[in-house]
Length: 75
Image (cartoon, rainbow, N blue to C red; front, side, top):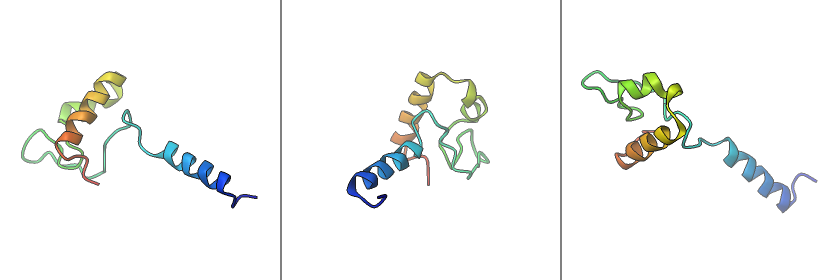
């Protein structure tokens, strides 16, 4: 049966695994660097946005830590 408590927890685990990991891009598709070098949607600099795919896991985690401390991403 798919409605058992065990399958519900498995479903919950599957949903969590599909949520954003810290190494995923913090982009929220609200891109704006009109007034400075910081995107108003995700909080990354223009260079961080442009080079995200080239950053190491450690660099991505550092960016995530900084932007979360600053109240980003704005979802």
